[in-house]
Length: 191
Image 1 (cartoon, rainbow, N blue to C red):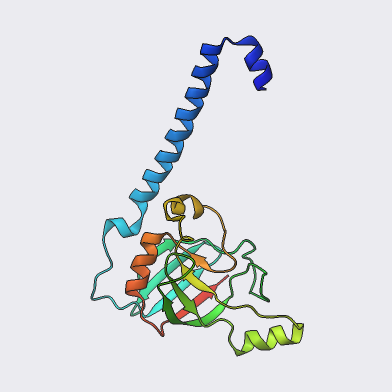
Image 2 (tube, rainbow, N blue to C red):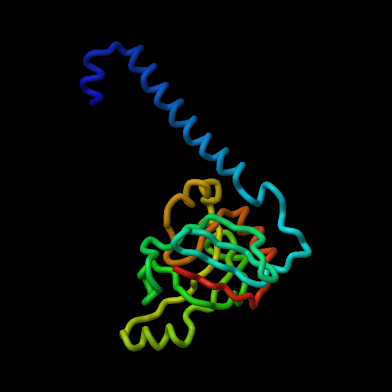
């Protein structure tokens, strides 16, 4: 296409053409980033310090993580999952997020992603299933932020499933989750 464009248009017009394309792309990207920032729940109002987040609910099909306190939804976040998110995690490397009720058992400040909270996957049932299939069940399923060094692209990364089976949010959202969720809280992950 550029051959025909170059052949029939003078150099000044070509420069203007590419300048307009560049400006258009910059406008699209910045508008998307601004819209995401405006819609980000963390920038609106912080979770009240009186709210004890005692349960986390994840809806894989809607790509939503909800923090619960005493049975009430306090805050919801758009999430990214593994590259093959449908169905229950069967084995290491299948890029699935498990389905079931687990426990948030420890927090990691030195994660390969921006902070993380570990889930208790695999449980005894997951291990038995994997053993019967003669596979490794995998592990290290976390709620985490963006990969270190890529936090500024969170608004873009969250538009697709990109983890190996974890539950990803933006870095600002992970900061809020990390402070709010108590260890030992159950996490229910539904299809």
